[in-house]
Length: 544
Picture 1 (cartoon, rainbow, N blue to C red):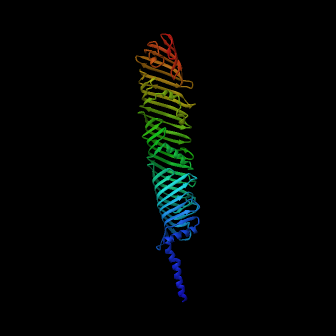
Picture 2: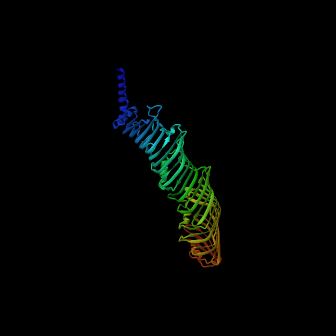
Picture 3: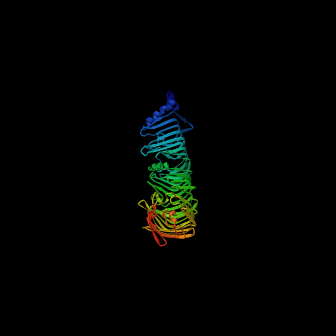
């Protein structure tokens, strides 16, 4: 009799203590009750569960459906249509360590770092979205439709010495206002270093692939980054500067930008390709000890268009060495090499040929102004430059001209920016096959300029009609300190055509000795004809 009572007591205990609660927990009411129990046992979190499932064939696995977990101490929450939990067989009654966690159709919102330490041997995500907002750091990260997993996983990520590997695909991702599509990430974590062995995606219709690491100090090391068909706009530069303020340090070993365009107020690039090594960002970009190669279909720099430019440079010890710079400019070709240091451009060699260049109407006035020169360089030193046969034209109505087969050779020329003016030193020789200077035809014109601190010495000569003229002068950017012309077999009306003397006596042989202001042209001096001297005042001959 006593044994029967013990047996029925055991059956009752089994039924009411285990079997009935087991099936009850798998009902809607039971799932709700399970959420209340978990909220009581884990007081920092609020649980809401739609359904609980368990299979005898997987005794250490529990499936939660329509589950919501809300942190009571942080603005973090978790929602999922299905959460499959693989319990830790070594300790079933704890909630920090799991064998595996499978999340399907979930949303995770995080506004601060997770304080609790959770880990699992396997974390698997299927159609999961993650939103991270941190008002203090002004950071907003959204990841939509994530598929992939981490083995093993820990909620503290870089704060623990855990070796793990991960593989994810993300349909859409955004960092503040930066948006990426079709993102793929493969990598691992070793010694608090997060390594992205392979990552890629699309940003603003551009394809990005690369290899990078987040180091233990949270700095970013990019071994390789390739961007294809990237369109860089002026407003993007402001956005980039804003986002980089929260990044402590970036090191890029190799950056490649292919088939891309750039549009800024003073610079436009079409179908450009850039490859640069050892690029660093630490509260500003640095290119020390880097190599750069750049080419493009076209480059517009300060309203000047260059076709098929190619640039190669190397930087080291605050000096940028330009190994090669070539381009097509105004139907001609040019190439130069040199270096840049402390805003000083040193040109070793500059060669150009076949240039067809039309000067702007205010070309002379612009020579005396710095404009954007000071923003780039304070000093330009040209060791040697050569301009082989080219065409130069000025349509300035005051003194239009055209020179054909125009050639120039310069040596040790220096251009210095000082007090918003340009100062030149060095020697330049200019010649042409023929030309026209305000309707006056010239043959074999020749000009030598010797730039000096006080003034520019010049000597010139040319065949004109059936005669010959030669001269010399000393000019500044504003004044004509001296200017002499000796003409043989040339009608003196040429002086009127060139606005030097409005009313000269006609003669086939004459000499002028002039001085005054250069711009506007206002000259005084004498006109000598047959040993008679005629006074010139303000470009007018006073007596005959």
